Length: 321
Image 1 (cartoon, helix red, strand yellow):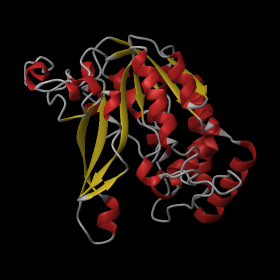
Image 2 (cartoon, rainbow, N blue to C red):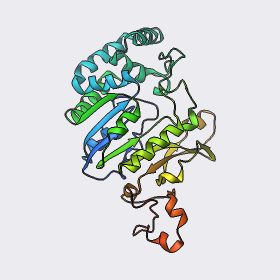
Image 3 (cartoon, rainbow, N blue to C red):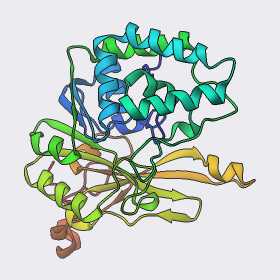
Image 4 (tube, helix red, strand yellow):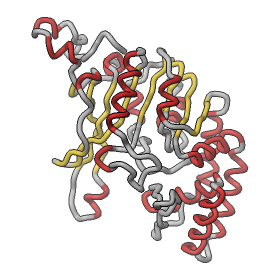
């Protein structure tokens, strides 16, 4: 099967991990909700695989949501605008990039954002103190070729049209609208690289608030998957989510660290996935490193055996999705 389209490059995209994450999403899921959608890699992969009926794409960065709206409504128009910007840069790539960035900061044009994401260093959005996009261009490349970009845009639109809703809003808005039968995939800014207002993110991570929102979501019986931090070699980033949430902790190998490679080292990156127990039971590996629920911590070993699936994987908080 060909790969799902991936037209919007965005640092932290889960394109390479999408298959492993989707293993925890039940086939026939009514709706997948991505409140921090970024490149929408998981939603596109889920629709491409026929695993979900509908998706919701949300993000606090309004220009990104406008870009997704334009891709869904008029992918050819976005492709033409991107192609003009890409070709206009050929004579003076740096000067052209600076002009586009300045204009985007004035008008938030979706095609200009797409061009900036395709051209900037590591496809990483960065902001200055005034909230303006200020990332520099990657001088080693010119960004995705227009022909390839058009194919990705048209392919994404074909998957999303009629099956996607969007919203430029804080992630809590999408969580409040989630219902049992939905699966929420939350990929917030990582705690290990975000503290307060970090310029690499449009909205930094408030850990206490995140935990409170997840607690409310779990209490309503909504299934959830959270990508959050992990480790690189022997170094860990961020603290684990608390046991009281009753989520299974699964580690996903994410390949060699590009940062370590750039510095002449070699280290493997492993990302953390926190999964509702009922979803963790779907994956072949189950719950590799379970995070025990409060009740599970207080019971005897004999009681704990009843919370295991047939493969012997402990499902913490098994009474909740």
